[in-house]
Amino acid sequence: MKEIDELIIPDDVRYAPDHEWARLEGHTVRIGISDYAQDQLGDITFVEMPNPGDSFDKGAQFGTLESTKAAAELYMPISGEVVAVNTELAESPGLINEDPYFRGWIIDVLPTRPAEMDELMDRAAYLEFLQGLA
Image (tube, rainbow, N blue to C red; front, side):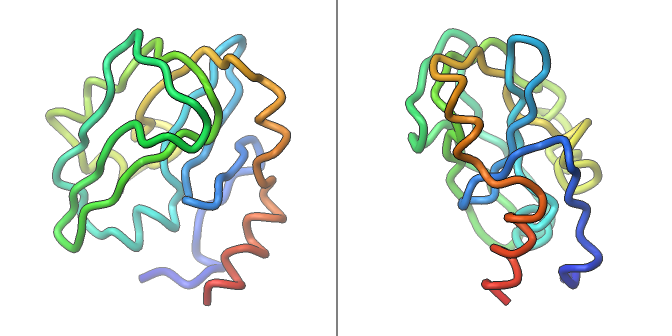
């Protein structure tokens, strides 16, 4: 497993305590899991995702990841309606391990409460959070 200083933690995303990230892209928010989360899970073998049109409140489970080590639930970092899913993950779930912030994104949502983005951790706060887990 990676040391904290080896993790990729971009500045342009916000982080939830459950290790999901959220990046504002125009009017939508792209969601995935952090480098820390994919590293802890190991090789991801399956991704269960919602369907476009599904709506979830912040904190609600929206999917599941299965890996060689464990299964993990995915929780919404913000409230919104799913407008797109990363269909590449059906055939190549390992994209999350290879590139969790770009090719390994999971869903795009149209936020119903955009101000919830401000409640998520920035890079510095997430790093501090991770150091508390070590």
